Length: 234
Length: 270
Image (cartoon, rainbow over all chains, first blue to last red):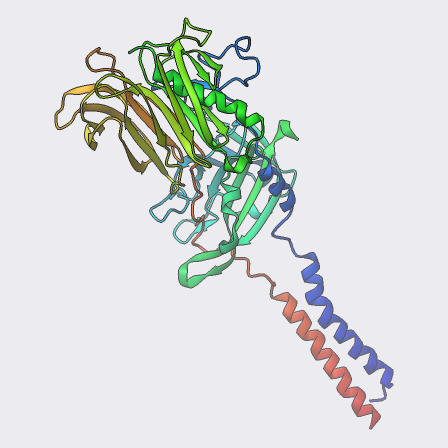
């Protein structure tokens, strides 16, 4: 009762500071959903020129010096098909994650298929394979499921630039990548054409769900994508 | 019969390249031109606008695609032994190339076995994810045919020089060509890889009479589209609601403190 007014002034000022500092401090120090987005965008923007297949019978430069050679190709049935192995395992050593990979396509709605077993990761089999000269190899895994609990990519959002990713092909060959970005968007704003691009620099894109969860539709509100580049390319 | 049209088509594409380099039109208006040689046993030299453009061009070969300005191109085809381009060509044609189109010029035999050049406009519209496009073109000296995939007819009554376009789930299919309405196999079976996001154009070529029927395949990729979304979670265990609970609690405590202090301050002033 005998305290001087300055005590109350100090207490008031202190209270105001705490009230302001708490949300501001959280905002400034919270783990960011997105890091390195520019790097991921730059990787997608390059469009390598496809190498024309070897000519079966080429035009002779001596015969037509002024004309660029016309690329020609064997038209008989049975040519072509990728010689690269499909990916069968993925490892995220920094998160202690090891998962089997299954080839996936799209479901009836046209959405990406995700393996039903949440411990497994899906590889979008219509897109590039590890080792292809261009485009995004897409691996997608559940963050979780209502029935099975945590999925293979439960902790994907903890990956940081520089973290390693290892993908093994069915031929036993390993492909090593380094994370360059982690991005998060509301589902309506996900750059699907960038994630599933078959052009641009060769890269690996790991996709899962995140953000807020809507109980009514049992669905997350965001997608999280981690982009990694082949180690040799760094 | 052996001399011919196929070569002519090829020549067109090559000649167009030369025009293309001279910058006649903007690249956006250019046509994409591919040439398919569908006349068996007939290597040729192709002259476009008088220049030898494709030398010793082999049957069952696909040339291109070339980005060419729209326009009219004169194509002459000579037997492979003729490198001078003089005398009477085996076949000659004037090819009109429309702006912006994706065109294949097919050198082939008519149903009656005469050499011909048929321009086809290729359907390069985008495919739904998981889908592939199969285009079958009857360019053989043969009657009407059916095309079967895995033994089931998917195209019926196709005649020279017509085509049929189907969008199908991507897969490798065992396809054969039968005489229309029969199970008499004319060509195949052959395993055709219908790649996702790709148009696979199959030409039936050759001559039934000369026992030279076969298939030539041209592909156009880049027609894919992306899946509509990535539904990768239904549990809510990883829910990230944003602000953790300690933030509003701490801010609230701060507010209470400030209000308390202010109230005391007011009281002491009285």
